Image (cartoon, rainbow, N blue to C red):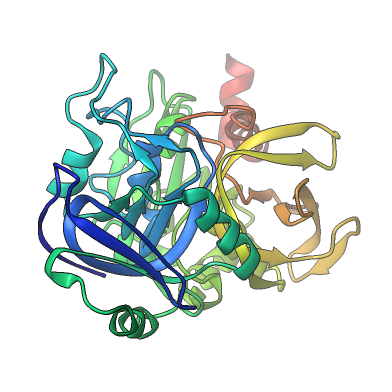
Length: 391
C-alpha cells in the first residue's frame, strides 16, 4: 500500500523508515517520494535485484537489501520476472550513482520512480537486518516528502496496516486470463500451471524441455484445468499466508485424486503440505536470497538455492507419514535451521520444493528438478511411453 507524490532522482529529499515496534532509520528518498507500508523483510542476494523486485511473491513486502551497494547494473527489459515491480517498498544502503552494464537501459532509481515504488537509501541496512533477525519480520513504513510527520503519527500508520499472517494475496497477483507458453522445439508434454504468483522464468524453464505450458488463473476449477489435457500439473510460487489458500488446496487434492504428475514450488510446496494434511506456520524472519543451503535427504547432496518464503510446512523430518494420498516424506531441509524445504509422495507421482529452481539470477544447482518433473510425466504417461518406444 503506497501513496506517491513525486520522484527523488537526486536523492536529496529526507526520508524515514519506521518499524511497528517503534525503531526508526533516517535516510534519503530513493525512487518515488511519498509513503508506503508493508512487511519488512530482508534479502541476502548480492545480485539479481531486478528479479527480486518483479517477483510477485514480494507483493506487500518492503525489501531490505543486505548487500550494501545496489543498482550498479541498472535495469534492462530482459530480466523482469513479471510485467511490473511488486515490492511495496525498497531499502538500500549505498545506491549506485550510475549504471555500469552493457545491457542497462535505465537506472534503478529511475525505474522505481516510474513505477511509483517508494524507497529509502542511506540506511544502515546491517543494523536493520540484525533488528529483523532478532525481533522478526514486522510491519514497516517508508515516508518522504509531504508524507513526513512526527514519528508517533507515522508509527500509528504502520500499525494500522494489515499483517501478512492471514493475508490472502494470490488472487491479487495471478493472471486473470489463461495464456500459453509454447514448447521450444518439438512439443513433448503439456503442463497446466496454476498461477499463484508465477515468475516468468518458470514456464520458460519447462518450455526449454519441450513442454507446452498453459498458465491458468489461481481460481481455476478442476474441470477447466483438465480441459488442457495435461500430462502434468504445476503449482507456482506466490505471496501471502498459505493457511488462507483453501481454493488451491481443493484444486490440488483433485489433481492428487486423479494421480496426474504434480510439481509445486514455494507456495506450491505449502499447498501440497496442506493437501496432505500438514499444517503451515510463519517463520520468524523467513528465507530470502540466492545463497541458501538445502540438503537433499535422499542423496545427501547440498544445493545452494534461491529462496523467497516467510511461511513453511510443519511436517516431521526423517520419518514417513501416512496421508490421504499414500505415504509421504520430507525430501529436503534447510541446513541453516532445518526448515522443511521439500515434500515427496511415495505412492503417487507428486513432489514439491520450497525454493526456486528456475533461479534466473542464479544459482542453478536445483535446475535438475525440472528434469525430474519431465521424467515423472514420461514415466506416468502411456501415450508418452509409446512415443518413446517408437523413437
